[in-house]
Length: 359
Image 1: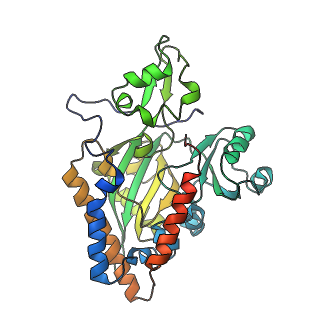
Image 2: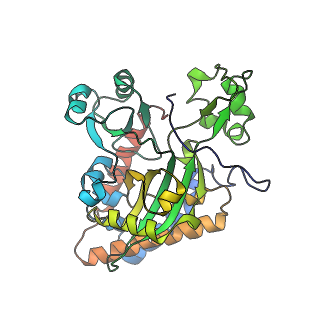
């Protein structure tokens, strides 16, 4: 695995949970109440696909199967100044050298599928050889985003909501992400260090396959080895509820960026940041992705979060998406329809099954 920067895990208190009681429940079980809420709202508003109108300029509102590049391409100058530079490429068809020559992004680069979620297939590459290998791991014809890697050490997910009748939007959730790390002692190999880690050792299936070619390595004493690059809890990152760090300055900055992405009312902005103080001041961060109606307020995956709070947050956030979409439908924006939504979901599932393991 390539070297990269992610904030290390914070020091644990004696009463801290290492893993949320519901963090690794099967998706069908955890999201069952959300699906019931969805059905109830669909019956109430007469359209089960209504949230696809919540962000009318996004494909399907960003609910499913949307293009990451298409969303970032919408950004006007105010927003674009905060977005990590990127370009697009089709695996097996476009010449990477020609694509990079058109926009010098520097090294390293983050390679991510244009359609996908939960960090599926995301790779960090250091040079042209690494880029060629990463592209070759995808099926021919898959659209990929090549994005300049931001060296800022922190990563966060910022949830934003603005009703069409509101002049100012608000940040409703802030999730601070960190990578589990192991520290070498010069004796044990990487497999043993992972199995002995207080959290990683409980969910080794998240790390061992990804690090299969390095498990026999013996890190030298004091060497810090991050276990995952992708900032997704289901891929092994650790999430922390940062609600206490939301400030008026951060909210104002995020609102300005969101308004400079036409048609964006509801979703999560993923960023890398220099320090928590800088993030609170609305400074020194880089946007790496903008997610629409299919995104969630990820602070619910903080191990300290109760199941009750998680569901209250889910219900409140998704209710906002329905209310926003209902208002926009009254103004002439049309939802996708259930058939189109199902087709997009099937396409996304098919694509994600073909992606390589993420870093």
